[in-house]
Length: 254
Ligand code: ADP
Ligand code: MG
Image 1 (cartoon, helix red, strand yellow):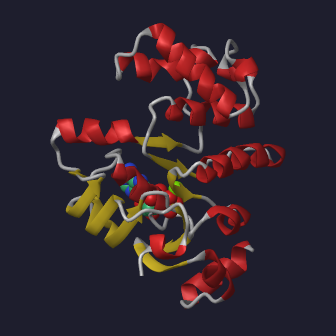
Image 2: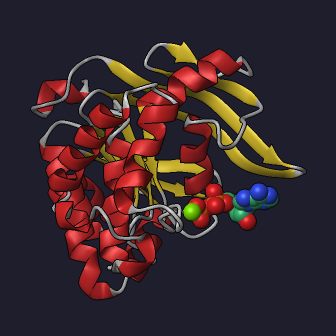
Image 3: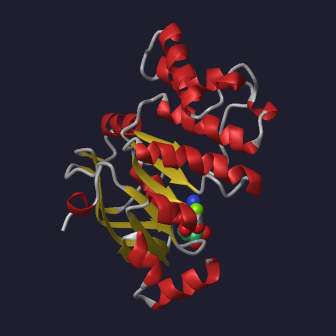
């Protein structure tokens, strides 16, 4: 049964397809036969112990890392060394990292308009209007003229999300977006992610926030030692984990 048959907001359109993907860092076999299909509107949480290959998996999807075997197809375009394909895919895929990776010498709004102006060739005025729209979306339009260093961690992460949204991506990848934040700032970032999910964004999120997974995900995937061990809807995943490794992981984090 496809996800769209059971969960509203999910269509049959395949946005990400990973087929038999393997990757090595030198001799180290980091991804072992990853098979993953993400449909439009899906909200997937990817979890697993540190070092299990979660970051590598999502970094392969926009070619921040290169896979050596298997296929990765994003919205119908296969990731190969063809630069045009890589650029096309990067235009569609937004990514938010643990460390916000904002440009410290640029204002919040400048951070947001950079890619629309230089990559999309958008006129500055239009890009700024778009930037303000997404800063409003993440509820910090009043911070537009400040520099990242003048903002709290939670605000900086919301700027990073707004900056990604300015490229109007079809897919958002999150790599532990709240892990570097002080606890009191986690909620404001998760709330932003929840609202993106409610708008139907296709999301693949690496996170340890299991409350978020329960609230938002339609599917939770557990990775260990470079393999997908288990995946299920959150209810089944948390209440009836099948694999011993999943059970151990859940017993340690919940
Ligand atoms: P996770 O995000 O699940 O913590 P990663 O995908 O970051 O895991 O890393 C998986 C494994 O690959 C880890 O053992 C890590 O040390 C190793 N690794 C990650 N990046 C590199 C790299 N650039 N070169 C060599 N090994 C790496
Ligand atoms: Mg990681």
